[in-house]
Amino acid sequence: MGIGRLLLRIVIGGIFVAHGMQKLTGAFGGAGLAGTEKMMAAQRMYPTRRNALAVAVGETAGGAAIVLGAGMPIATFAAVATMATAVKKVHLKNGPWNVDGGYEFNLALGTAATALTIDGPGPLSLDALIGKSKWGPFWGLLAAGAGVVAASLAIEMGEKAAPADAGGSDADVAPEEAATGAAPSA
Image (cartoon, rainbow, N blue to C red; front, top):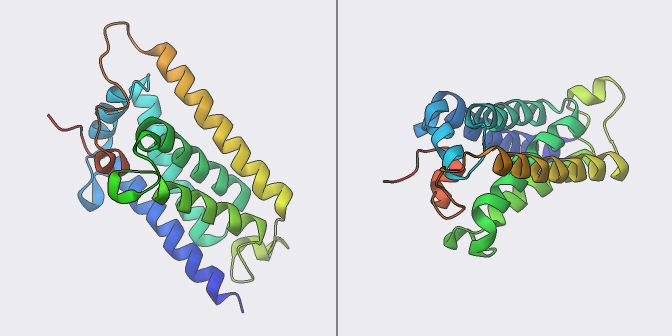
């Protein structure tokens, strides 16, 4: 009776919440908002405060919505936008494998969120209470596509807003620091 999808939502959404809370509050060994702002500066994502808040709130709120099975297209949009940004700014150059700092973890999380929107969060969800136990391919793919577009725009706008003397490049933050929101290594 939807137990499999419930378990998947708890794990996937829980991972997003935990990573978001690392960035937002410093929970679970994270660097908090100040460290996330430093990470944004190293990645040339300006203004750093706005982008730090966007990723922290996007992961936290999107993850909570996935856990609850509430507003899955919006939750998927937030999840995919944060994961697509992480892939482009940090992980893509390392190839697919997580052991090398690659993008497989980000890809798995974004794909899982998309699949949960397409096939629905299941009968044990808040969406089911409004008659949306299944959203379908249109909504899932639209949410994922919009997330990728939003990530691309955020990256482009961040680069354009970067001060001319701002250092930083995609290589300045180690993948594990980017994933947790930890401050860049010295």
